[in-house]
Amino acid sequence: MSWPWLPLDIYVHIFNQLPVSVDGDESSTRILSNCCQTNSQVRGAAILPSIWEPHYGARYTHADPQRELARKEKHNNDWRMMFYDRRRLDRLAVKLLDGIIEERSDRTSRARKLCSLSHDVWNALDFEARCAVPEIFCTHGDEKTGVPASYPLTRRYWARKVQGVIVRHSAIGLWAHLRLQGPDGVLSFEEVLAGLSAFFDHASAEIITQLDALASQCREHLIAAGHSLDVENMNGIGLAGICTNICSFMRSQGFDAAGQNFHHLFNHFPHRFLSTHRKTIPLSLVYVFVAIARRLGIAASPTDFPHRVMAHVSSPNPDVSDMYVDVYGSSTKAILSANVDVPRLLLQAGISPTSMLRYIVPSPAAPMLLRAARNILSSLRLLLHGATEVSEAHCQAAMYASYCVNILFMNDDEDIHHLVNHLSDFPLDLGPVLYDTFAPLLQPRRAQVLMDDCKEAIASEEVSGKPPNKRSGTFQHVKYFVGMVFEHAIQGYLGCIKGWEPMCMASEDWIVQMDVDSLPRGRHQPFYHVYALTGPPERYVAEDNIRPLSLTPLMARDFVDTIPQVSRYFDDAEVKETGLSRMHPSPESQLEYPDDDDFATTWSLTQ
Image 1 (cartoon, rainbow, N blue to C red):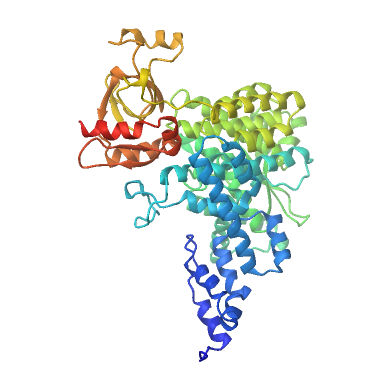
Image 2 (cartoon, rainbow, N blue to C red):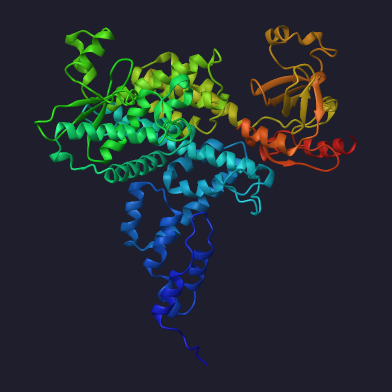
C-alpha cells in the first residue's frame, strides 16, 4: 500500500522550519541529509539549494575567497553540495588536529596541511576551540551541560594555535604585498594594521566586522542628530562638522585619550583597542576614525605626523580645502587649521618648513605599520621596568609581531636571530609561517639564517627520538609527579609540576647563581620543571623546595587562565573528595612520562 505523500511545497515549508544553528549543532542538517535518502518526493524538497543556504551561511562564516568562488562555480551555487564539500574539509581538519594533540612528532607537517586549508577550516577549528570542557573550567559563554570533548583543555589549546597559524600566514602574506606595492597601492591602512592582531590569534575579518558595526552605529547617530551625509555636496563647514561629530560619537563609545595607560601594550592591537582598551593612543584612535569616516563616504587617511598621528580629510569638492583632525585631542579641538595649527605644531616638533610636506600628506600603510611596531617595542621596554602588568604570553605575541614588521620592512638582521628564540608559545609557526612564508620574503643570506634556526627549533620541538622518562632503575627515587600542585617552601608561590629530571640538569652558572648546593640534598636530587602562578611562569625547582598540595577547582582555573601553555600539557583536572587532587596530563605529557599517571594514583591514596 502506498503512503499518501504530502505535496512538495508542504515538505519545503516543513524543512524551512528546521532551526539554523550557529554553534555547530548538526541536528537540522543531519535531518536534511537523511531525508535526501528517502523517496523522490521528500528528497526533491530536501535537496533544494534554498533549504540549505541558511544552514551553510550560519555554519561557514569564514572561507578562502578564491576557493569559495571556485566551489560556487563547481556546484552552480548548490548550497547542499557546497555544504558537503566543507564538511569533508571539517573532518580532515579535525583528524589533523587530533594528530597534533596525540602525537608530538609530525606536528609541523600537520600544521602545514592545516595552514594550506586556510580559512576554509576556520569554523571547524573554532568549534574545536570552543569545545565543551569540564564545568570547573567553564567561563562566560561556555555550555555547562555539554559532554566534554576528549582532551578538552588541550583540544582548545591546539585548535587556537592552528587558527593562529592560519591568520599569521595571511597577515604576513598581506604585508609582503604591501612591501612590493608602491605608495599608491590598494592595501588599506585598516587591513594592514588588523594584521597585528593575528599575533594574538584574531582574524582580520573579526576586526573588520567590529569596524562595520561601529560605522553603522555612527551613521544612525549622525542621522538622528539631523546631519546630512551627502559628502559630495558638502561645504567645508559641513565636512568639519561631520568629522567633529564622528569624534564625539567615538568618545560616547569610550574611544578617548589614553591618559595614564598611554604606554599599555594592548593600545597597539586592534582587537584590544576596539574592545577592552578604548582609551588609547593617537594612532589607534585615528585608525578607528578613518575606518568609520571611509564607511560614511569621507576620504580620510592617517598622516605620519610627529609625536601625534593626525587624520587627513579631503573633499571631492575642489572648493573645499583639506583638513586635519586631531582625534586624540578632539575633546578640546578636533579640527586643526592647515594654515595655522599644523605649521605651528610641526615647527614645535623641530620640522623645518621645507620638510613639512611628508608629514601632512596622507600616509601609505607601510609607515603606519612601522610606527605601530616601534610603539610596540617602546611599550615592551617599559614593561621591563614594571610600567604595567601584562602576561609573558602577551609580551611574546607582541614581540613576535614587532620583530616580523622590522625584519620585513627595515632589514633588521639582529631581530632575525632573536625571532625563533622568543617563540616558545608558537610551536606550530616554525614551519608554515616562518620557514615557508616569511623566510622566502627575505634576502637569500638572511633567509638562510632564519630557515636554519627554524630547522633546529622544529627538531627540538618534535623530539620524535627522545626516550620517555620511565620510573625504573635510577629514576625510582623521583618522589613527585607530573600534574601535582605545590607550594614553594621558600618563595611561597603556587606551582604545578610539568616535568622532572633525576638530578639538576641546569648549567653550572645557574647552579652557582641559585646556590643549589646549599640545599640539604644539593644538586644530587630530582629537579622539576614547573609552572608558577606568580612571577615568571616557568621555573626549575629542587625537590627539597616542594610542599605538595591538593588541587582545588579555583587553583585549576587559575593555572589555565593565567598560563596558556598549561592547557598544552594538561587536558583536565582530577578534583577528588579523598586523596590528592591534581591536573591530568595531556597525551603529550603521558608519552613523555608514561608511568606518572599510575604513580600519581598510587601516591595520592597513601596521603
